[in-house]
Every structure is written in structure tokens, then in C-alpha cells.
Amino acid sequence: MLIIGHRGAAGTHPENTLGSIDAAIAAGADWVEIDVRSVDSGLIVLHDEQLERTTNGNGSVYDLTLAELRQLDAGDGERIPLLPEVLDRIGARCGLNIEIKQADIAPALAAVLQPVLRARPAWRGRIMVSSFLEGPLREFARLKPDGVELAALSDHNSVEAQALALAIGATALNVSLAELSGHVVATAHRSGLRLLVYTVNETHDIERCHRLGVDGIFTDFPARAIAFLREQPRI
Ligand code: G3P
Ligand code: MG
Image 1 (cartoon, helix red, strand yellow):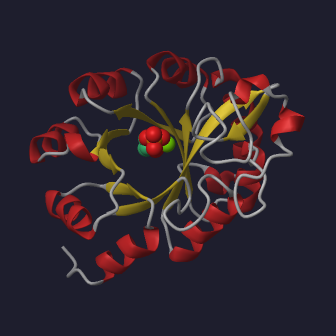
Image 2 (cartoon, rainbow, N blue to C red):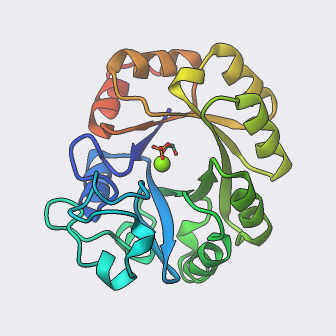
């Protein structure tokens, strides 16, 4: 079961910061998940549209310029990262799941990833782009560079999300823990999709995912999940 650090290691570090990503890698995460938005044509790594929860800023991210956003503290004195900074920092040492949080960023995202994949072939198969947003995901699927994987995200209708995943040539279906069942796992597997589950933090839920044959979990506590897996007999 793959361990995917959710927003880095958001349970122990300020989410979606380089420090949080470093912590997930240090814990041994197979992949790191981040959320991406676009401001002034720059791709920034930030979950919420509103700034209050994760930064010392106020209001909507879209009311500030990129330069102003970069002055903010995203936790522990860190700036809101740019996507290229994250790609540089990881350097293909683990996989990167980029979750599109906003419409109209597919072309900019493809434009950032294309040269990275060309310059560093080790990234091939280690970048997965996902979204709850059908339009941007379909658009990215048309533009995506070779070597980038796709996943459809579901928060309440995994049947619809699975159909979308298959329609765009995705390799994974990413569902919420609330949607998880043996049937959802079996249906995804029958369609040739990997089934990934978010956000799985409690040990009994990690155990359940493992037991159901889930392919990977997004967790705020990658060190905890890896410690759990190390204790399991190989299956
Ligand atoms: O991609 C999995 C998960 O991150 C989706 O939900 O709200 O945490 O971005 P959210
Ligand atoms: Mg996310």
C-alpha cells in the first residue's frame, strides 16, 4: 500500500509548505500530495481559497498579487511555495500528486511540467494530476505531457468519478474514506484502476484500508502509516 503524504505531512507540519514536504519524504512517503492554484500566471501551492486558515493573510487569495502572496507566512516562517519550487525540492525522490483546485489552470500546469519531464526523465510515472473538477481534469488530460498519470477524485459519487477516470485514461480513482467499501475497491480494480483513499489518519482506518486491498492512502501522518505497515506481515 502506497503512503502518500497529504499536503506533505500536514498532521505535524504547516500544510503544503516545503518543510511539510521534506518531513513526508524524511518519513519515507512514497508520494506527496499538494493542492495547486494559479495567481498572476504563477502556480502556487495552497489548499483554501481564503488565506486565514493556513497563512497570516486575510481574504481571498485572488485579491492579492503573487508578490503580495509571497510575502505571507504559511507557517514556521515559510512562504507559500510555487509549484516549480516543489518540483525542484523533491527532484523525483518520491512521487508528486498535484491536485488542481481551480478551473483554467490546465495549460499553465502542462507548461510547467513539460520541460521538467524532458529535463528529468526520472519524473516519468512519478507525477499524478488529480481533481474534483471535471472540466480542468478533462482539459489537462488533453494537454498532459507523456509520463504524467491522471486520477479522478471522488467525494460522494465514486461511480461517476470512476466513469470519468476511465473516460480520460486515468490510472487511479481517489475516493474519500467515507466512500470506502470492498465493493468500491473491487469495482476499481476490475476496471484496471488503482484505488487510493483520503484522508486516512487513524490506525484503525489505515488497517482497514490495508485489509481491503487499497492501493494507497493519503495521510497527514505518513510516519504513523509507515510504522503501521512495517509491523504487518507481507501479503
Ligand atoms: O487528493 C486527496 C485530497 O487532498 C482531496 O481533498 O480537500 O484534502 O484537497 P482535499
Ligand atoms: Mg488535496
